[in-house]
Amino acid sequence: MVITIPIPDLKKPPALKFPERCVNCGKSKDETLGITLNMGVQKRDQPVTMQLTVPMCSACAKKERSVAKVTLVPFLVAGLVVGLVAFVPATLISPEGTTPQTLGFPFVFGGFVGMITGVIAGSVVEFFTKILAAPFYGKLLTRRPLTIFGFFAESDELVGISAKFLRKAKTVRLEFENEEIAREFTQLNHLEN
Ligand SMILES: [Zn+2]
Picture 1 (cartoon, rainbow, N blue to C red):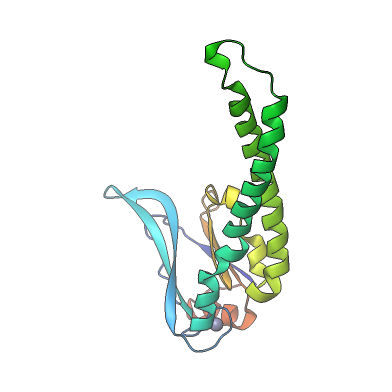
Picture 2 (picture 1 turned 120 degrees about the horizontal axis):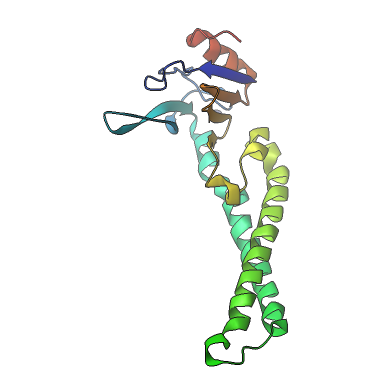
């Protein structure tokens, strides 16, 4: 379930309340995890952020902390292995440098080819790992940006919830895995949806 929250004044983002139970499975709350969305504006020389304090049960929080196993880790491992495998032949077929300055060229070329191939292969493996892991981590897992795009993404995810700030539209888009929690959240914050 997707909920959009208008932010008319970016310098004063609303403080949103969550139901006092796990956002993912609805069991009683054991801890909270945070999501920070940057509003892209400044107030008194400080960047304005919107903080979401998300209640979680300990099992789901543990899941969230282990999510790298199905995102970052497959990306790095597959990327490294394939990158190395590509590095060797690329180095061998690369033209030899003839002057002292270009002697290292095969290694530069091999490194470049290895890196590109590694990033692509790592992302492909990560993509399929996520699909396979979705029954355990929830379908929102597949919406998480791939590691390689994660650095540029303006969204933030936890198990059970995905938050995205749409700057032009001045809205925050929240997606919940759990419909019941989403409805409670809407009521708690007097949102219409
Ligand atoms: Zn839970």
